[in-house]
Amino acid sequence: MTGPLSGMSTLLTTLSQAAHPDEVATALVRGPGAAYGATSAAILWRSKDELFVLGLDGYRPSEVEGFASLDLHRDYPLTRAFWEGEVIIDPSATVAEHYAAMRRPQSRWRSLAERIPDGCLVSAPIISDGRPIGTYALNCASVPDWSTLDIAVLDAISYALGLWLTHPDSGLPVSGFEADRPEASLSSRQVAILRMVFGGRTNTSIAAALGVSLSTVKQDLTKAMAHLGTTDRTSAAEAARALGLFDERREEPAT
Image (cartoon, rainbow, N blue to C red):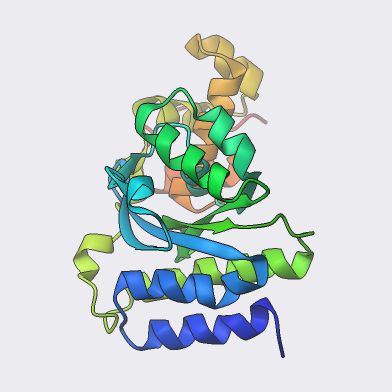
């Protein structure tokens, strides 16, 4: 068997050997990433409001200089993948153009775009227990015709890395990778939005009540769903209520 499925065995073997994170990044490039012309890979884990770089392979020194972490509240491909809990694929040139105004990312992404001008950036969450605990990136030299099998392989990588990061035999400092309690990660506005969702309010109504844009409400709901490990707004509101996040003045569901 050839292709990304064959490459998965390389990655899984490396993960089973309690390898250094840089070796895991190498296995990503040489294993399943090889089917997509991957030239480099990065693995990041989440701690509070940041994604910290854990392992790297294939980058030039200038491309990773000063690249130690990403603010989860900034708009980056990897942070979007984290919050949305899905694989995001962007052309390298588009990524470089979008982030050209940022000083450090400008040199990194522009360098990558110049090195692989017709390539793409794959950004994906690392999943454990149904919710993101980190992200990984693959810089590919081409833009394949991504099939459902390819996306399934990228999702499989997400879960494999999640098992590796949290397994007690991985050789990693497990306590450092434990995800925060979901309720501790929610902002007061996100809790207020979830309380109103539980009360039967529409997103438009919630935006008007809080004096924020409809887009802000949708973004906060997306982030809250990622924290709570749910896939829809109603389930997120019910999970928040079950955690005791709503006070006695909460709105009851509409009848």
